[in-house]
Amino acid sequence: MNHIQQQPQPRFTAKAMIAFIAVILLVLSTSGLLNQLRANPLLFSYASPISLPKFEQGMIGKQVTYFQEQDVKLSLDEAIERFQGQQVRISSNDSVSLGIGVKPVWLKFSIINNDLSDLSYRLAIETPWLDHIDTYLVQNGRLVRHVIGGDALPFEQRPMSYRFYAFEHNYPVGITDVYIRVESIGPMAIPIRLSTSEQAIALDLAAGYQYGVLYGIMLALALYNLVLYVFIRQKEYGLYALYLIGFVLNSLSYTGQIHAVFTPHFGPYFQDWVDIFLMITYSIAGLHFARLLLNTKAYAPNLDKLTIRVTQIIPIGMVVGFLFDQLVFSILLAFMLNCGFVTLFIAMGVYAHKAGKAFAVTFLVSSVTAAVCITISTLAVAGLLVPYNDYTFKAIEVGMAFEAILLAVILAQQFRMAKLDKLLAESYARCDTLTRLNNRFGFNAVVSPIWQNIVREKREAAVMIFDIDDFKSINDTYGHSAGDKALMQVAYCVESTKRSGDVSARWGGEEFIVFLPETTKAQALVQAERLRKALMNMVIDAGDGITFQLSASFGIAGSEDGQFEEKLLAKVDIEHLINQADNALYKAKNSGKNQVQLSSELAQV
Image 1 (spheres, rainbow, N blue to C red):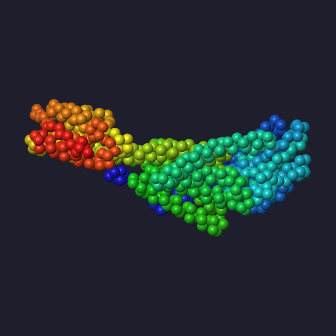
Image 2 (cartoon, one colour):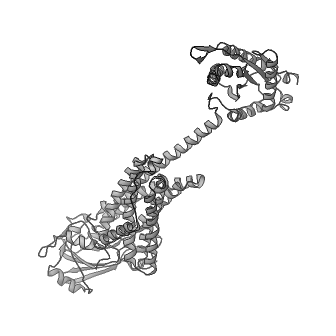
Image 3 (cartoon, rainbow, N blue to C red):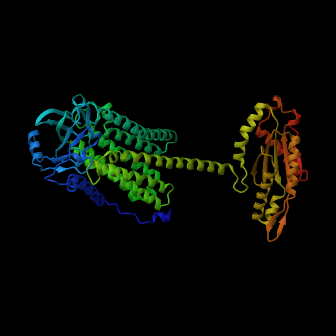
């Protein structure tokens, strides 16, 4: 422990934490700029149209051109004129991702239908937190449909009562130009999917099964550990359960599922606030769970303090943002905490591994895997470096499910080790440290239920107590070390000569006891004589070529054949039986030692 405490610790000062926060905020706030820098600024190019029915279904980001408004909201005609001037960009990914708190964006793609069949297609923007979405369908220069939606509208005003912005349309033969204007305070991630209505239903069912499996795994683990917490009151089990429940609720929120079912009419921006506060809820629970699981306070106190401060300062900042209605500020803080969550989880795993903590490697594997998946999803949504698509969006669920399973394995191993430690402690409490026989406590714990069964069924039983003769002279002559060897060898002799159902113990000092169930006094006498002779034949090495032998005196009490009846049982308990055997031992000592004496009290009842 002293060695661990002397290891150098990182200096996580307040200035360092402020710098860390500033860097994260700078990166997130410039996400739109970074996205633009990596986009292809093709000013005189043409995005390929979508050809029906050849195009079956999928993300259409690479067929989309787009530009962002500056300071003035454009009308549809002004947007069309801008697209015709080709001062636009072509998306290089399956989704257009521009970052957090960026200006409204106009998108355009064209659909060519060469088939006379009347197929219904669903157009969906699979990000449920976009606030205002206007879609204009233009054919031959004429507006044929205007579809209004977004998270800021009540469900009854949306084109479909669906967790995403979506609508269905029959595209006529010819060319249909689709213009979409998106305005949102939150992350501007715009994954557009086009599919037939039948394919859209099939995708919804598949997504439902996928989410059902992932949520089912995590909720089952959460419930199990919550039950463990209720019964054993160890905080890490409760925090682990909160961590998983918080993540499932957060996932249900940012995928739109919880709002489509439970909170469809809670007003504009409600989902945005719920998303970010649920995001930090599972992050905070996860960080405190990791602190307790790995006990970072013991070997990485500065890291432990930093974790506590992060889980305090950022939520307070988000509450301030909520009170002053600063959604972008709070969103940036939430994403910063998510990034900090990933970093701190890995840092705790590294320090735990250096400190030689059990399960540190498993924790590191789980945290790094989850960190990679969380980072992929977070960067994709924020519009940074990673393309937004089905795989990057769901990476966080897959990574968290994998992490949840490994963390559950760690908790299960920890629980098993705690049980083994308890059993080991109980074993030591019941065991004589020198001879490894039962001590008095252990003897009583083992014999008590056996005795109750004997009394209930009116069966036979006997107790044998013996004492090593002149043991003090052995210690005085050969030394206490030789005396200990004698006690250990006597214990071995007792164990090797007793029957499997007998219970032996070191009763104290040089005195031993054996409980013999299903045994009369006469049978116990035979057992005692066999053990007495075995003890006499032992040769004990006192060291330096010196050996010696010993003898023992025995006292026996118990039932006689056919005598252990109800009248007898009413007057006898195990303590009384032991006392009578002890009296018989006293008689053996006073009668010359190295002999067996029987108690006569029970036979006279």
